[in-house]
Length: 226
Image (cartoon, rainbow, N blue to C red; front, side):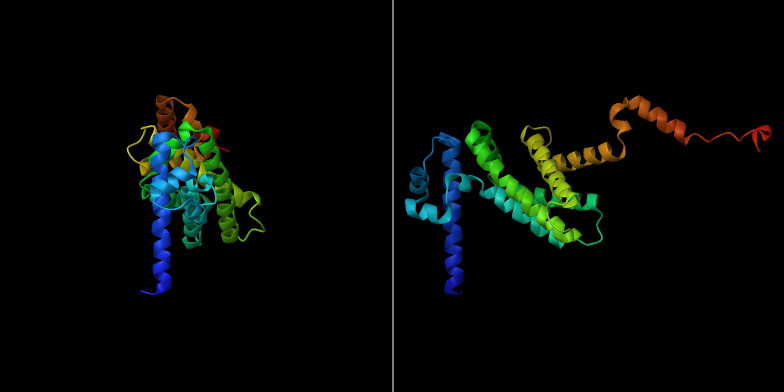
């Protein structure tokens, strides 16, 4: 193993130790009340070392959001070029689910954000950066002029909104896992877009309409033909 590889691995270990120590302290003391010095001490590094890895406490908390955005942009570039836009969004949602489900501290981070307006602000500020990077990736795939064109921006926002709704539903206990929540959110979106009447009609009315539509039609009387 080369010296450069060992150095990179060491940096990853230190970064991870700082992150885990911070999330533990944020959960116990609160994001607002925890200082950089306390995080550094808990991670076994100096204050100077902390800032070498994380410019601010906000950057530390939002690391998960940044990695989430990187996972989405990478997944967009790998998807087959033949996918239709809505299928592409579905694949991005699945990629987002796979990435977030592999992160062991997801629930703890959500709890921290719920208890602190400053933590939510830190999270939201990076989420806008994720939106921009995902829009860039969609724009490159669609060969759009910029990420501010309507289509890539819409696809990026759809992906992020579906994921946010799914994460909230899963966290609140509505679904047993994030994958189920995400697929239900995507399914709801397609019903809204493709079959809006089914969302407003009672279940028995929908069934009645379907039966009527499928009922064989009687032949027209000869007198009615022209």
